[in-house]
Amino acid sequence: MASAIALKKAGWEPVIVERAPERRTGGYFIGLQDAGKHAAERLGVLPGIHIRTPEASPNWHMTKDGGRVRVAGFADQPTRPATLLRGDIEEGLWNGVDGQVEIRFGTSPVAIVERADGVDVTLDTKDGSSTIERFDLVIGADGLRFTVRKLVFGPQEKFMHSLDAVICAYQLEEQMETFRQRDGVILNQDKRSLWVFPLQDHTPTAFFAYRTKDVDAQFERPAVETLRDVFADMEPHSIVEEALEDLSNAPDYLFDSVHTVEMDRWHKSRVVLVGDSAWCLTLFSGMGATAGLMGGQQLGEALAAQNGNVPAALKSWEGACAPTLKNSARPCGSNRRCSCHRTGFSSSCADWSCASAGVISRSFQQCISRR
Figure 1 (cartoon, one colour):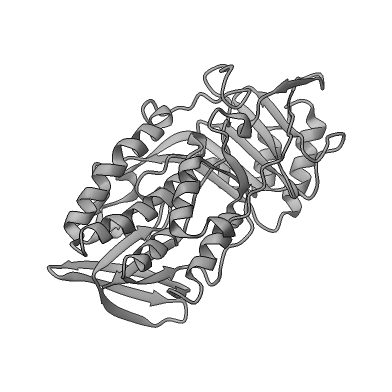
Figure 2 (cartoon, one colour; figure 1 turned 30 degrees about the vertical axis):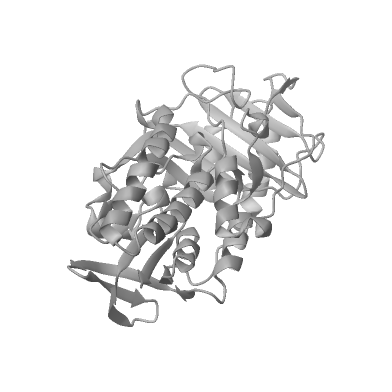
């Protein structure tokens, strides 16, 4: 939606194609860096994004015997990121497109053919209809594994690189017993972590993460069953079990493997990728939501600066964005493993303990636009 808002400001007529039948609200904990807030401000949506950073939030690292050690948490990083829910950003962006931009739910691109003066896109809907439409520009912002990149740039395996890790994120029904509402909780043992992220005016969110040698096998059973086995001997187990009990009742959650995306270029003719489709910094970077907002906002400004010259605008945009975003991905992408931190940004422990940042930006949208 950030790209659609930016294009609308630049004089385009964007169309958002969303494969889901309706909006995806709610969601899990994410962080928003200053650069993301700046991008949201330039898009005009920052006032509509509800920030939930606690005013005072002690974070506790739990020892195996149940002891508590005061540590720094996600929001204590030197960059002082804001904390909120994925749905808070969705709500702010939705207010920027609702009534301003055409949105087609239950619709997916199934073929993309590039022409000299445009792009022909075959769109299928959930009711079985299919149409071919001509657009001046196609923006693939449809997430880590989805359609536009595969149709235009090649198979997923060519660009996705596994970090041999699995994560699960969701909202808790209430704070952990014996902890205050604003407390953060961290369990970190043997290549496994459980984080409880506090929010100012909302119940906390939980975040499980662990390494595995067999990623595919983790999804053969329901998430709660897999996590119960993986975290069976983590202490203090009462906290683990309390979090898993809430997962068993959660209306929605994210349970997924962790990958980076590495591409030589993010655009081809009049098709461009933005967000996880292009760079997927992973949740460990702490930059996912920020990068998605920045990418969309700066793309619109590049198109405006080039007066609609699409090839020149895409080249300029990628040249400006790529160094920063690829540098942000380097800690995880360069050696296929993450070193996460007990305190959130210091005191590295072992070669793996997920997860220093609970950020993931997964949009399942495409933006296709006409001048």
